[in-house]
Image (cartoon, rainbow, N blue to C red):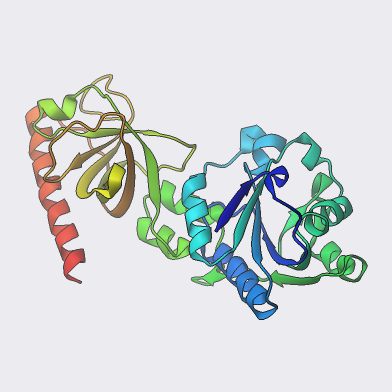
Length: 313
């Protein structure tokens, strides 16, 4: 899949294409339906399948105080879109100029002139253009004028309710990993860089890798998790991840730290991605460091059991 960061990076305008449009944060099951529909339509008409998205969530510009945390990093999003069969991903800057573009100008100058849209695929609730004045009703009315066909998809339902990025964020915030992943239809991954911490885990016999996020991702609820960890060069390990304020140790502060099973080495500065397998318990305060260490031993033992059970399924 080709990735074009900005319309100006296109080698030349497309003559004809099927274009899926959306923010696509999370590339959840609803987004997947949109992109798959675009790919199927493109294959049927022998033209490329393009995905058009933005370099940021529009709310980051229009109302930054309400900007949602991300479900996926840009690299995760791009990989997931590529796996769905898109031929190209076009990422345009959502800036003040774009936010003021009328819906008609967006269709004429971007979708038609640059991307050659002969078919457009969006979710039924899609809005675009200055003041969000464009919607699927406007797109339906514009089909004949601008010579394209619209596919507006109803929301995908899971558990009788529409799948949405907002719903998934809430699941993660409450630690409901399995439900979040059922809505995503793929694992939730938290990515960042390993940074130096206070070495409290090392003092307790369980050295941990402290994760500094590279993007504004949603972090699951405080607690202890069985996880799988991927380091640079694709090395993978099981792990016990603790998220929270470490209340047993005064002033320790918030951290995302993971004890890697059967690992020894220096990984400071390395990229690390965490896949959450199961939430084991909530964060607790202990009366002593000895009690905390005993619980950590029990947690690691439980993590091994959980990961072994999953491998045996």
